[in-house]
Image (cartoon, rainbow, N blue to C red; front, side):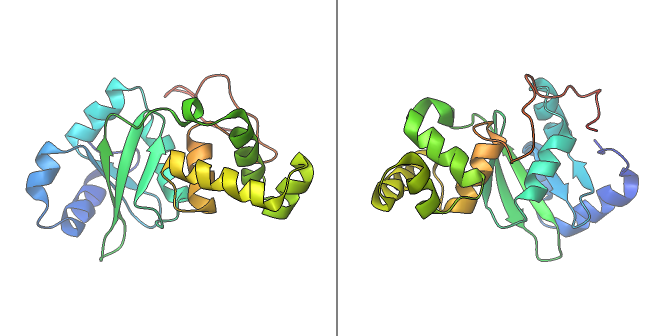
Length: 185
């Protein structure tokens, strides 16, 4: 299955970059994203995304926002494993089920700290705003990282954004994710 505006050229580029992985591409849901954000899905990925009513463009945007620096990203109800390819581009393996929803495991205070983290506040600023010590903020961050399976601030922010636990400053949260037919402004 070709993604939007890709066609045969992207399929050939993906196959060349993934040489030697053909058997996996025949059985595993996989997506190839090049440096320009163009993408190609194999047949299994198309079925996988259609069954979950997940637009491939949203998934690709999430993967690109990770900047190729993460090995795993959560997007809606999908866990992705990301492999940086030597020839350029990313191989994204789609996995299911995703881990338990993070919002169910975080305390209310941890959610507050996470939102402030996404806003770009330092530990000292978070401590001041919550009227707690910086050590308490560090403890909350350690718990957040552990519960979300994150390695640090950037990874926690990305998980928060992709799971709707926080939004970037100046953005509004839609009540429901956009449907496949609508385009973002």
